[in-house]
Image (tube, rainbow, N blue to C red; front, side, top):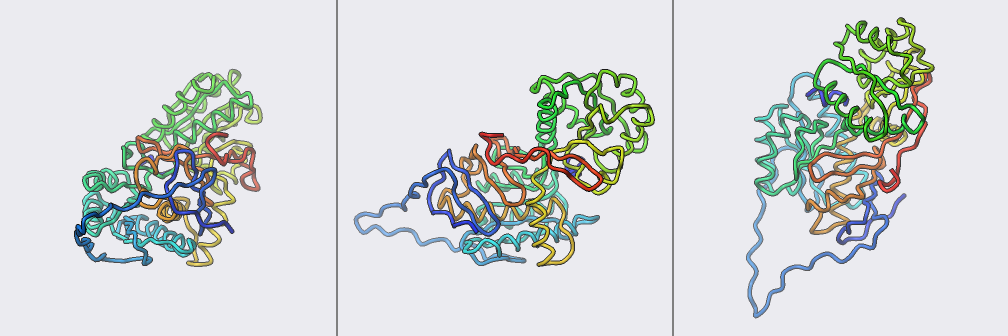
Length: 410
């Protein structure tokens, strides 16, 4: 997994085309179109003068594990045999995909589960098999290097990809990243801070790719929000003292400090700042979604800090259903597989023959999931999410600002 990927009772919809001003609302086992009047889907080709249509091509029979029995084939690429914790994550994502199909009553999807082995070569082979077996959509893979290997195979066959990566370098037209992107998180927490009068910022970021991306996002977000960046310090995990001392020297100019990294970094930074006399009741700490962790809530120095994540009530409900069905605990990334499968099933039901076309997948009004809330895919393959803002407390996360339910109100 790359550094970018560390952080990482409704009625059924009517069948028809999605208009540009429609939102596919995804509630666990159902989908409905909100805010639009679906039109009739395109009719099949007319046949005149007794002309016979060609006999339909019989797709290659799916190989490996299959979940569901619908007429629309969707591939699910996961690192089932990868080393490290890749296989364990893959197992939870496979379970979440099964839960999504069972929750979505009346779905018309067959999931073809393919093992990538956690490597680019394995991912390319899995994508090739999926295309040969007539997959109309590829969900996954997980790692950025895998996504880049899958892209030419899928795009060559005109099959869109919704990957579980959060690395923007893996995104392109037709290849979408569904992971929680750090730049989107930074934009939203900086915007919230500015709305609360916190416009004089410093940052302490990790010395690596994740820190580089977070810093770039901070500079862009500050300019957009009318905030001023006093300084940015880089530090390696376990060696934050110098960076903290440098920021402490300018603390009088600050009303907020951005620390994007989570457990193992943010608590040490906060402790070092307090040790250097920084009043963290005056200088507000700002984080990212990786702050949603027991180690953050148990750190007295981080108490009061703000961070953005999807509305946690949706994930908690999903996690409860997952535990009841499979035992054990899912991970945040596990929920992406659930949301992706429900999205695929919802588009099959709602958009008919146009279900996976790019203009449908990149609907600017996006999709509303019961698990992770509002999201949309951009034409360049990146995503935007409607995130809530929480405060870290000893008792856990405290909701400060609810997540938006439409991008018009975001």
